[in-house]
Length: 128
Image (tube, rainbow, N blue to C red):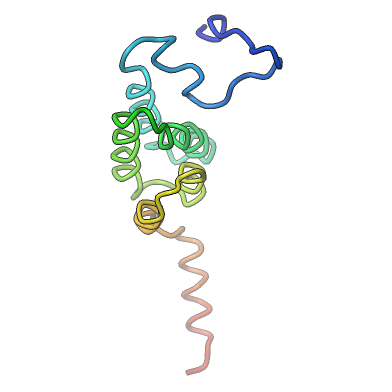
């Protein structure tokens, strides 16, 4: 397991995000491969697969010193947006400071069918 290679800092807390256990520990290309693995996980409609992948991608999206990882993450989110949950995308964009990118990606996520159906019923009940 890769966790045995990570030593705890003096505070006793595990460092957060992929940057704490990225290319320095596993070699060149690890973070880009991690993004690809998250994109594969986003093909699953399970809520926790979506949230977990979104959580990891949030840190990959904000690595300032790694433009390649950021570009790979942005491309993966654009490709996965049509099948992502709103909640998963919100997790991925939680620390994103690029408001244009954030708006584009959130707009690309389809609304939940149940919410859309509920709104249609409300719209039909509203007197004209």
